Length: 432
Length: 172
Image 1 (cartoon, rainbow over the protein chains, first blue to last red):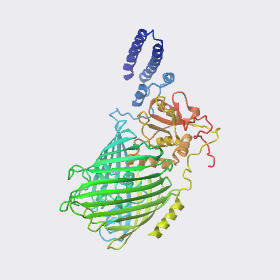
Image 2 (tube, rainbow over the protein chains, first blue to last red):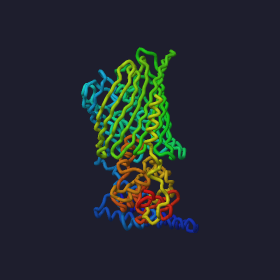
Image 3 (tube, rainbow over the protein chains, first blue to last red):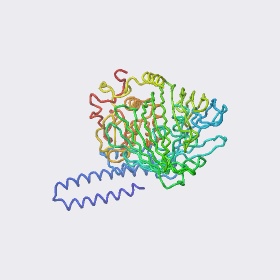
Image 4 (cartoon, helix red, strand yellow):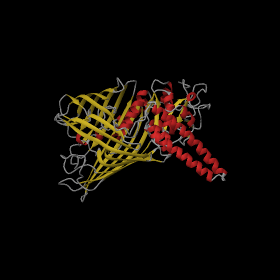
């Protein structure tokens, strides 16, 4: 139908071009140019007629991609006239009868035991847990994307997760509209994972993608006792900085920051910010072409917290990372410092932390090692429950299929004023 | 602590990949082996790419052509031998690693769109002919005038030191 309209219009265009050509007949160079254009348009008409014949005979339907091709004449139209190309797989975005959603799921089930007493953070599963041997359902992560248009994309992570009271809750962990006009500037609006360090934006909520059974304590989620503003609501811009083989990238973010009025309120300020000040985060990292798999960079995060009953707090988080990742080898290193300064006083609380993680794949097996450390003051105003925590983890990841992984991990965690914790976890992770 | 650090350093040295580019980057294959042509739409102004830039496009690390048009990468079906050459010589990955790379890339938001997979060379030619931002690969002997063959590091498939050829690599 579209082609039927285009053909007469093209004919009119040809006639118009012919008329224009006759008026300027004395100018030989221009005439040559017009002649070429006319030939091109005649060929296009041949193409369109062939396309109409194809459509009328009920062969393969028109598509967005074919329409795009019609807008950019190929160099050899004669072939197209003889063999009208069919569009193999370009999505039909204008077809409202088809869904635009792409869905991938991630999940895990863990069997774990440790020697801790009471509710505590378990490095084996990277979250809070009780003190009994348990099968634990991990996060059921529904990753939904939609290619809205050539430059817009929707992305979300909807997570179903059981709490310590065994009841399931639903969290929208990411909720982003992305606009991608070039490699140098991409902007996302919504709820995102803050680009502090490396781990937080590399693995998100899927344990299947991670080598270990759980996230490093430094990058534990807010509702799992973590110390960082893992999620944020606002605007995030990313892109390349022209730098040749250095591969310099930037991330700049402005968001609501984390809540601080009380430990009992939702940590992520999804709808209402408790103050009008915004958080800022700037990250720079390099991926040099000369050393494939290497990424190194730093980030600086700033926010203004307003806890009830305390002076306002100036929060700064400095993070540095260097990771080397190949399909068969992985070495992650990150260190950060969380600095909380109480306004109007000289009191400053600094919480340093780091982790290093090393693994190598042998066929379907990947043994790994991680050492992590965090040292918060016992009177830290924002996360007083954290204290000192450090120790190694050893594990083995086995991938029996492309979509299923089995992990076995041992953790030893030394704590301040408490007995060290020994823990073992076995985790079945999968994607579907 | 120092003792632990020394042990860790020893383990890292022992485990680290012995050759940084053990998978890729071998130049100078026998010219008798069938060559793989990297093809784009004729509307694409690009004529030549460095190997590194080509690799970034195939990895999804570049999403736009210099003219601003979005890149659409098209791959052949895993059963096709041409794909194995691309996995070996461009990605340096197994099929499973490639799958994981794009799952993680899309999941982290770094890769905007996954590659499209087509059954055979004829479909790839038609797709690249139809989609101005498309890039794909076929055997050089299958190329016709409907698409444009890219130079890689200044070389075309007929050239002696062209990178992408079927068959075993020297030293493999």
